[in-house]
Image (cartoon, rainbow, N blue to C red; front, side):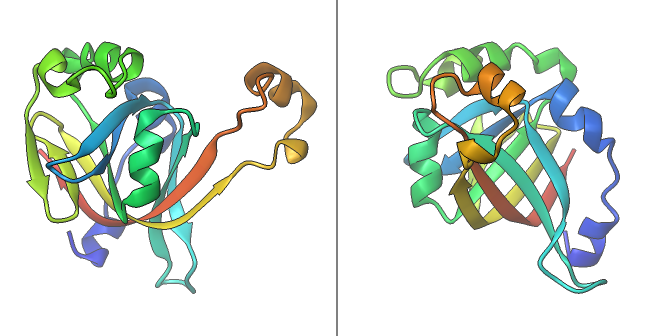
Amino acid sequence: MELREIKKFNTDIFSLFDDRWAVLTAGTGDSFNGMTISWGSLGTLWGMPPRGKPVATVYVRPDRYTFEFLQKSADFTISFFPENLRKIHNVFGRKSGRDTDKIVAAGIHVRDSSRGVIYEEADLTLVCRRLYASQFDISAIPADIREQFYGDNNPHYVFIGEIQDIIEK
């Protein structure tokens, strides 16, 4: 989609990640990994209106296998699947790509894009170019959240990507 069309993208952003979940994928067709995510956001950053960059923000712990690919890749994709394929999150959320071929286990298909891995069965894919990555400063997180999510002192990294394309089926 062109920038003008990206701005016309319309979705319920509060339920997109929270209710539907997504598969975050980084790497290339030869070497990549994806993982289920349920935390994310969409918005505008780093530009004066009406030229702000459309962005997607995702959060990944550094011990996840996908993190290694995010660190090396300039691009990543965020793929949402129809409800009848929700079972793929059992594979992408519970299995490690270090020892499982998630594509085979989930029964889905990949086509390599010049800017990231796209799944044939996804009904919505955001193709993103990484703009920023940094780990949460655990001392700046409110105590109740820190206790609930970071008792292991292993805070998430924040990845912000400029949305380059939106593929909808």
